[in-house]
Image 1 (cartoon, rainbow, N blue to C red):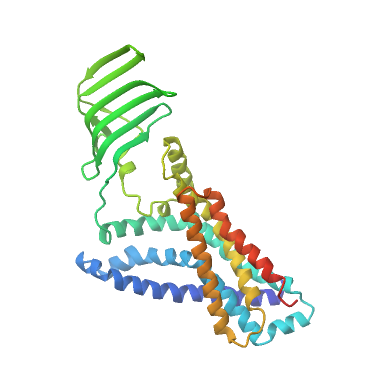
Image 2 (tube, one colour):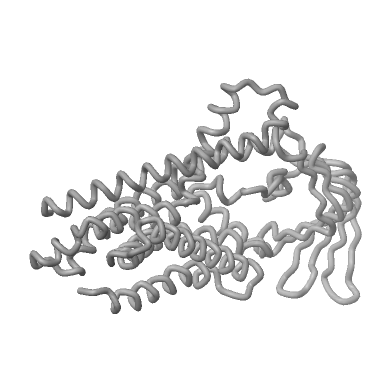
Length: 359
């Protein structure tokens, strides 16, 4: 690595972390003013607010704004080099523009790998505390409102509840069905089923069991109230508020497998989250290079105009990501495709812009 590479990488990473610090600090101050009434209502101390919430919210926002901050840092550093005609001097000494991109690619890769480690393992651990804080002190108490809930409990077994009360962990109009292919073999019903938190089992009221051996062969059996275990837990009816953000990659993969086994209808949401975590670091590198390409030419508008352009393009990228995510959640796009489309499209934009940069 040349001295020039180290010079550019140092300036680039310094600008990136400084931009992150300034932007996220401003956003956290704005967030505090919006939620201050909730903090006062619950009589929270400043220590509880800072060390129980904002210490975890800061890295969350830093990761969320990474596409904007990395773009701004690349534009700011490169525009400064161009304004001082340093890029002209570098290229006049025989360095190609492609070679000039290398230190930026290295810096972007360092940030991308750092972010991948954060979003895969570190941030979810902090998000558990942050989301729990928001549920407790900011959001209204969660109440499960689902009706006629169907859950695949095993390979051939299904659970049905007409309603579920999450405050007391009671399910009403419970049914446990065994289905072989498309044929109902057994159906057990109970008026209610209650979670026993001490024994970690479900307590069922008296049950009526119907067994079907053929079109005209049905038996009825009545069973007394009893305890039983199911591949079903109160957390399955808990709040899903920002649930994906609280899971590490291994936890998210296990959760997705469970969702697929149960035939859940919201699996797309978690698949999108998984694939976005893999595409995000590549997007960081792509946006870094686009920022360099856009600002390498000396502009009469100065650095300010190029930074403003960087803001606009970074926000366009984020909107593109949100649009793709929504399309994946409603089933219009496969989650894998939706996660990579913004990165691939902007990579194509970067290649197109590269052709018009003076080399």
